[in-house]
Image (cartoon, rainbow, N blue to C red; front, side):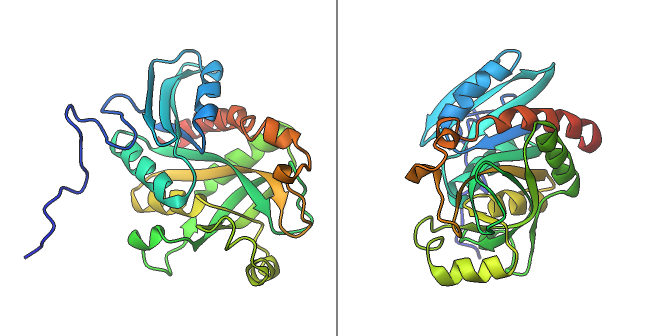
Length: 259
């Protein structure tokens, strides 16, 4: 006899998802995920119009509207695999199907320059969230069609692009700054490190969705450069918002192939 009495997913009155503050009909199948609500607010100018908008707090806010005539949702999830998983679960429950994460990353190879774009083919599951979704041997892999479309769109937008395996970790300071971790994953050819992608890819795979990510390099753990330390501060000023444009175009291309 099970002790668990709560339903698999809880709802607030009116069918509202408690983390994102949305309900049925608010979310499009095509979704962009980002870390900060400011990116969502700035995305409003890229859509034809905004037909739905909510701010649920905890850095979580969501908009939906047509982009070149096709409905798209842009949602922030804050930072880290755990909160991103909460947001993504509810977005999927309400109709999200193809997800592209727009983020930043710290390079772990000295040939990857500040301002380059990393498109992950897979992510090392070095965080605590995905163990609840799949056993340790289960890979976090991006859909190959998402990778190909994103890489082509990023290059067309004038970016220097790297594709390959990245690492997702919970510890922004502790895990990323310990020499043995940097040396190990540098030697394995891992391109960079960040905090959400393994969860996004694992959840998408286990729930029959499609996902990928585009990550702007704003630091390099090997060379010591970092925008937050004053190197190429324009990357922080512009953040990684500019990736939104080619990510939106990628979603439209993938819609015809995957939906």
